[in-house]
Length: 318
Ligand SMILES: Nc1ncnc2c1ncn2[C@@H]1O[C@H](COP(=O)(O)OP(=O)(O)OP(=O)(O)O)[C@@H](O)[C@H]1O
Ligand code: SF4
Ligand SMILES: [Mg+2]
Image 1 (cartoon, protein in one colour):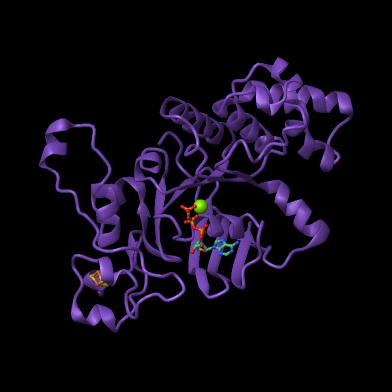
Image 2 (cartoon, rainbow, N blue to C red):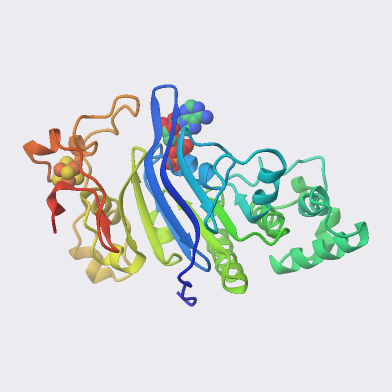
């Protein structure tokens, strides 16, 4: 990574919990994001990644737990206070088709946050919109067009320009490339990386795919059924994954070196994901874990360790 994060806790979440009916979508998650840092959140579908993104960006309120921005508790903010912090916390979603109003021009979409927050005059906002479109490598003449006239990649650039309009401090990008074709994916990821370098922006990059986050993030958080099961420096975690679930996810990611690729063993996870409304006793990964031991049925492992943390009884007390 080209930027070294400063050691300032910008966004911190503690013990976040959020349930939907009987499903504990997020079940006691801690997360820290420093300014200039990109943190990847990885896990299978249903592991709670989007819910975590919505909680830390204050699009949703947790049932319990706490979110702090710059050391200030923002968990219970509402009304004007919430509107003010939401300027600093912007989100880009997976689907650039659903996130833009088809009846409004691109210029309107990008300028809307400025208008809502009363930034500048109409003319100044038009200039800002042109500048924002240039920053995401789009021709400013596109401001007159409608989303339906753009490609998926162009729409995602528009969504990113819109998210950057208020110069946020934190960007949550939830699967920002999974609706795009392969060649457009790396363009959008490179754009996010460039924006982060320019502004010291802190980014939470959510993806079900290790291949997407491994080269772009400083740290990686691995989620399984609403919990963080492993967390650490991105390079270290990829080189030496500790949790059997992380190992299995990584074994499915191709490596560029064909010789190494041939020598690698793909770990196939047994069984289906358990019913999230009724997770197993003890370690909730045990039904699929190739290393499960009898006591994994009794003891629910806690996330522990120094800078590289893991929730697995194999690594207890190490
Ligand atoms: N609004 C909701 N109503 C009911 N259940 C929900 C809602 N949002 C999420 N859930 C449930 O919470 C769990 C976590 O969902 P979440 O969308 O956070 O997972 P995810 O990791 O983002 O998955 P994906 O990779 O499919 O986007 C799932 O079991 C999901 O069905
Ligand atoms: S605690 Fe047991 S079941 Fe859970 S991941 Fe570790 S070895 Fe596997
Ligand atoms: Mg999701």
